[in-house]
Image (tube, rainbow, N blue to C red; front, side, top):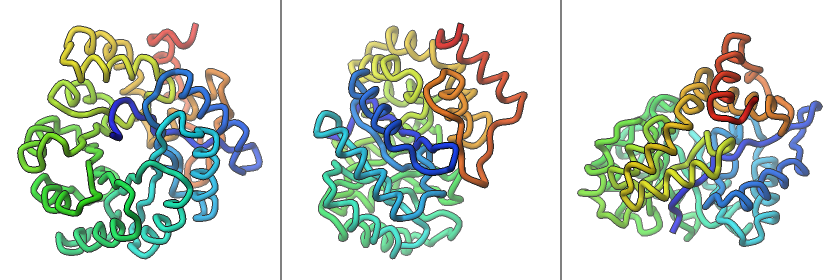
Length: 292
């Protein structure tokens, strides 16, 4: 099952703006050694919006090759164009991924009927499991629980990444779709509450920096050990907040660069964070014990 502590992995770039595949391999190895349950490749945090389709596929391929079955790999396949999402799905499916993360079509503001048709077309493009991704703060499209239940009737739609921060939706979706329908938090600040409420895990930005701590929080939450879950989460709360002080993945990449793990290279229109944001991120890194 695609559950547990899953990292929304960054895509490292060279100073020339190319994908740094050697460093990508190092990051995959890092998460394998740290015990992360799965890698989400080329989602929002992986800067899917600035990669070409060929690069998108190549990054997923490289991630799967390095993972070599030692960690699950979920690939982003979403687009605001259904034909593009279907093409990505068809190209990525043979690479050996364990499933897909499919964001709601952004900007278009599709109708309910349009949403269903979009996801149905993507699901028909591959038999692999598909996880819905609801992040209305970026897409202007809220996938409400009753719509999730309708989409859950499609056999290979097996879960949702819920990034609204509305923890009450865990019980709503569980009632409508059953407990086996996988629910993953996509909002790090409320992820602990989400898992304690019955969620199955998290797809996390913070896990790029603190994979062991994130896994400890998720594992404790899933066994309903509230004290241990909240203790682990408390150590990450400053990071949760600072990593969204500007648009993701600007802060997390800068934080990783500050720790010497990579260079803070972005593709326009993304640029390094403002000086005030940098100071806030540094303070959070220090509070988390990552920076002396």
